[in-house]
Image (cartoon, rainbow, N blue to C red; front, side, top):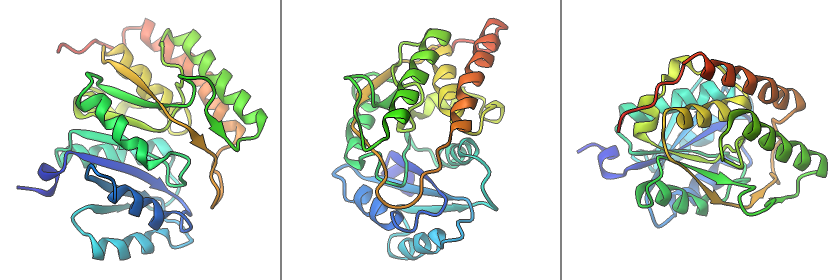
Length: 251
């Protein structure tokens, strides 16, 4: 029996210069009552993030894994690489999470539960399902993020309140149904595209309330151009849906 057959869930964490956080985040994930494996996708971090992960792998080679890439190739492509890796190893639940503790690892449990026990095909760690649950963000960024999600809902027709969320659990059937090589966006709009595609394919999406805490250590990768991609990219997604790009999956 393979290690993936023993444990049904893997957490994908893309990294670029996360040496301050990576050992701690992996340690917390591995300590949870449900056993999650961890896959780090590192984009050739000059600060030695990958070297730290390799040291941890020596201590726990069955549950910690690393894919190294040549450089910064985009968040979306990192997750696509992780999804393919996880599908090849037969994980049932494949989860996106940030390295910087903005996503609380304890929330992995209810995210997985929503898919494994509560009938969702895809669950979203939502900052906005019960109000605005964001800590230590500048007000301008809170407003920009909140209204970006509202804009996406209006254009796409999705009922998901946190459309740009990056804390997501996919059942493997969702990722098998999405043509991963045809996902267009690499940055912030990637998160919208994945949710919208799952929605148009007929999968059930459930939002799980979380509290998002801005990073304490390391440097944020967010900028306004990333938001711009989301704003204009969503129009393209909607047009593609009118053109019949998405065919609902028969279950």
